[in-house]
Structure formats: structure tokens, C-alpha cells
Image (tube, rainbow, N blue to C red; front, side):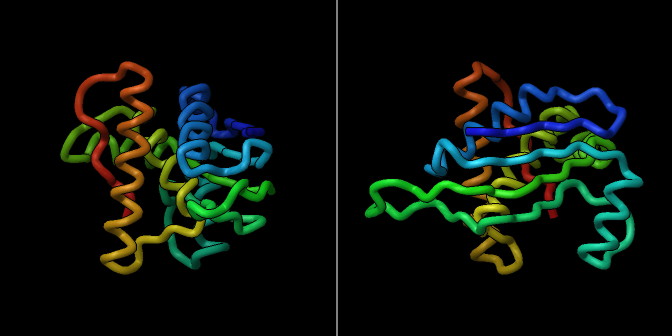
Length: 165
């Protein structure tokens, strides 16, 4: 899996954890191992510009996803998943730090960025949370992936609760 993490934010983040959880999420979703993903970490000003440009909403947001080849997880009947360019995930550590601190299960900025990375991957794969049933499916899958990754890495304590709106 080719995953690039580019930190342009000026904030120190655990880039290896972002890379690892993205790789774990893609493997768990059975995405072709030769697929490509880009993760960009930006400051609040850059995120706000993207948020206005693409969503017509003011202020910075936590995560944005920009799909490219519209890859989807393969069905159980598929022998091999298709490969392609998944797209870009853009993360904002400033918003992540605030959300982590305000979450019911307070957690670090890096833990929030891990959660947001999985959230962004799921958006790239066509998941959404506009409708209650979609939200339940996406957030359930997101929690299962984060919990699985944390268990695999020997991380204890409660997983971050979904803070993504």
C-alpha cells in the first residue's frame, strides 16, 4: 500500500501512527495492496480555506476527504479487489486537539487524528453519516477499526469516542 503522509501544519504529530492506522484500515476493508492514498496535515487557516472552497462552510473542520478513483470495499464474492488511487485525506491537528480535549472520553490530539484518519478512509470508500442508519454503520465500522488497531498495538484504555460531526 502506498501511503504518503505530508505534515504542512507546523504542529508535531505522530505521522507514523497516522500511516499505520491508515494502512490497517485499508487492509481491514480489503483494499488492494497496490492502491495509493495521500494524507495531508494542515493548519487551521489552510483547512478553513478548503472548507469554504469545497463545502461552502465557514471555519476550519477536522477532516476532509477527496476521493479519486471511487474505490469501494470488494464484496465477499470478489476474488481480488481493484487497485487504484483512493484520494486525499486532509487533517487539521488544531481542530483535532480541541475535539479530543472536549470529548466525553478526553483523549490526545494524536488519538483524535488516528480516529479522523479512519473516518477519512471510510469517506474515501463511499461511507457517509448523513442519515441515521448510515451514521450507525459508518461509526460502528470506524470504532471497530480503531479498536482493532489499538488492540494490535497494545494500547489500553478506552478508545476515543467519535467526535466527528
